[in-house]
Amino acid sequence: MTGPSLVWFRKDLRLSDNPALQAAIARGGPVVCVFIRDEATSGALPVGGAAAWWLHHSLAALADDIAARGGTFILKSGEPPTIIPDLCREFDIEAVFWNRCYEPEAVARDMNLKTDLKDRGFYVESFNGSLLREPLEVKTKAGGAYGVFTPFWKALCAMGDPPRPVAAPDVLPGLPTDRSGDDLEDWSLLPTKPDWSGGLQESWSPGESGARARLSDFLESSVARYGDRRNRPDLDGTSRLSPHLAFGELSPREIWHIARDAAHREGGQAESGIWSFLREIGWRDFNHNLLFHNPEMPVRNYNEKFDAFPWLDNEDALKRWQKGRTGYPMVDAGMRELWHTGFIHNRVRMVAASFLVKHLLIDWRHGEAWFRDTLVDADLANNVANWQWVAGCGADAAPYFRIFNPIGQGEKFDPDGTYIRRWIPEIAALPDKYLNEPWTAPDSVLDEAGIDLGRTYPKPIVEHKRARERALSAYDEIKGAA
Image (cartoon, rainbow, N blue to C red; front, side):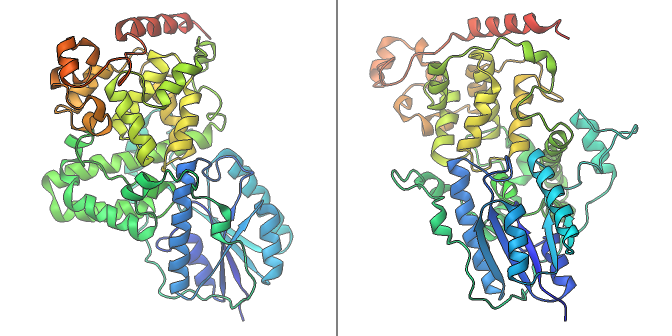
């Protein structure tokens, strides 16, 4: 008889299109599924409070899905290089399977663990379960890695569609056991005093079924106009699949094929919107490629010129930005949305990030750390690469002199003020003319709107024109740097 296999779940909390799980089932014999809370490996697991909330609910959903199919699912806390060999001895495991991670420390950990397990006599195999194509697959003509997105995207598309996804198994051949792992409740991933998760509970449904429902709703209701509406935070125009992707509740190749099939059926405007959406899935692959080939990106500037950039150390300004108290409504609305829901619309994400690094001259690493702590879709590769892109020091970066005007961005992408009024109710009564710059409103207008500027809503932390000039001057200082 074929002996038991161990499947190590990580950022692939799903049963459908899970190559490691499929390989274990195809091998025959019982399958033991395990998730390890590894807090020692940087980037291997989300560390922020919002992502921890998501992880709790995603694991609970996965446990239910495995149990419904007769499977065995164990939770453990600790270091995988110790826990996995212990589980192999405990359950007489013969083969170990997992889907690969691409964070630098996770890559090193997994390589060492695979070598150790093979030396102990176990069969070990790992798979691509989280990207359209792996970092070593998409290469330049010279065989190197891409540092610019557009040629990367063209090369990715030229490789054709990724493999078709495989459906979830109807039955999981579990292993009867009275042995127990950790209790999910004991991990204390959920907030208690205070319980700030109400906004998250209103906004999200973690787990594979929630991910599938969100994708279906997006393709039915929003994708046709995705190209036009994806920059509008006042509209429900985006997929909001990023946290589901971050935790692997749907694979990108399943999203790709479901979307491509819809494009074939619908054609026309829907097809255009779907390709615009799939391009964003490609951007996610690009970010993971960047991190894989540049493992120091979480702490180092991709563009070394920025090592000499004169960042300011301003704790008060950082806190005001974090709390949505900068005095610029578009920025503040985004930061409050983030705090309440664990999410911030992509357009507003860029505006808020640009404001921190260019208006306030605060190091992008402080912003990246805050987003990592507060986002439900916290992902090291996406977070780091996108922050460096906004700051101007990353790959294929927005030029440093491209400085988002938070006033103009609000007027253009929230034209009726719906988004700002939702998240900053204290200025909701302002006429549209003054909504993005309350400090320009006459006293009579402020009085009528019930606003005491500087008390009920802050005055601007910086003046836009002067902040822009200061940022450009700082950029001039490093232009000639080697």
